[in-house]
Amino acid sequence: MSDPSAHLQRLRALIESAPALPERGDWLALIDAAMPAAAASGAGPEMARLRQDVEDAERARDTANLQRMKVAGQLNTLHKSLAAAVPEVPAGKDAQSDALRRIEYLVTHGASAPGAVEAARAAEMEAPMPGRAVLEAVIAGERRFSKAQLEFTIAEAMVLTGWAQTPLELMAEGEPWLAALILKNQN
Image (tube, rainbow, N blue to C red; front, side, top):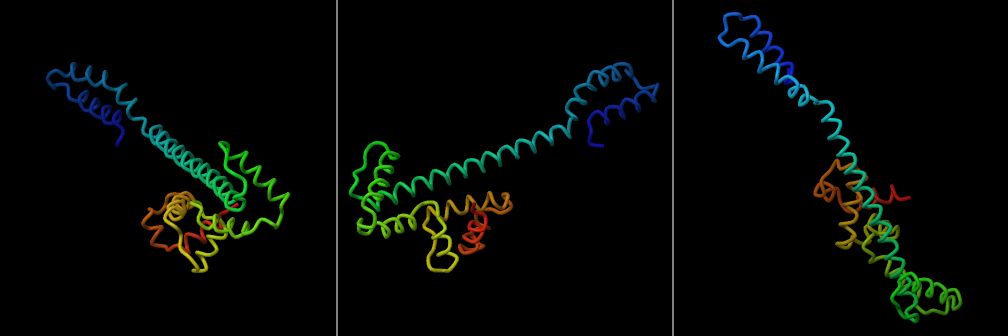
């Protein structure tokens, strides 16, 4: 019996069954006054449901934040790759306009941009959010994650595993395991 109102009802029944109890009427009045508050606080299933709703909302928020981080990381990597591939186009104040001017330059100058492909690959390999090439290289044992890539990978792995493991437990699985988990779940 963990329900407070059930305890109070049992106590009331015991007091009612003891007619010789001094101040019996006062005790019964106090219990009757406490019953509504006890019933309200005994909303255990409702509180449990609300707590679960809060936990679910927090997980959804964390998942959405991670997704925003991924998109921002991809966009940042793309901008850096374009800047590395086309240094001839100077950077302005608007990254989007710079990217479009660099794409236009690549379209008009094509393969004549020396080192463009290598520069873009190098930028991808050092991006804070590991792309497919980085993940495949880590799985193959050809490289390790950078610090920023490892932090991002662990955060993503926590979401993918439903927060079932701590960051230390995930790191103990090893970088190739983490990379395989992320690669398997990429869109």
